[in-house]
Image 1 (cartoon, rainbow, N blue to C red):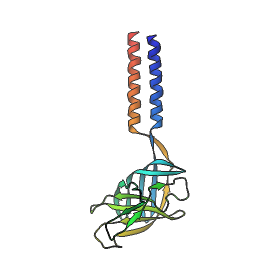
Image 2 (cartoon, one colour):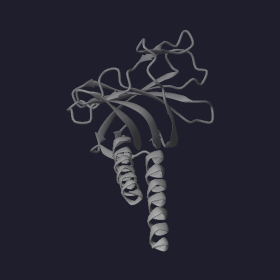
Image 3 (cartoon, rainbow, N blue to C red):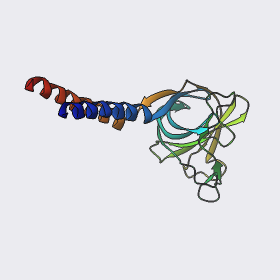
Length: 192
């Protein structure tokens, strides 16, 4: 009877571990920039339904006018759809949604994120101005008066196919469970 309970426990543990490892994952995609700026941005996204994804993380770098900038962070949507800068600068409309399977990768809200700069963060907005036509707008925050603190550059975008990647915590949980099961099986073989 003890052996039956142990086998049942091991079987259920394997099912739970495998289920947890396959259920928890983040989607990622690669966005390649061309035109007025170049670079590769790696985006972490979550499904928003209807073929749209909410961008929740960003890494990579891009080159603007000969200078390479590392990405900072995605600016999470604030509910108003507008990110305001100190007056009189204005702001950016954004929603951080991306449509990787559509002819238009971003809508006119676009993706708002920061770039690291020695003079402070550069706020960048990538958005659509028509089917497959995109614009990069940047708020430079370099002390220049409005409108010279903003720049606008036409950009081309291409996106790679989404790939499911397991969360690190899921992989760790799966490995710990497998080690535990291996220990139980080893103990059982030693005792027999």
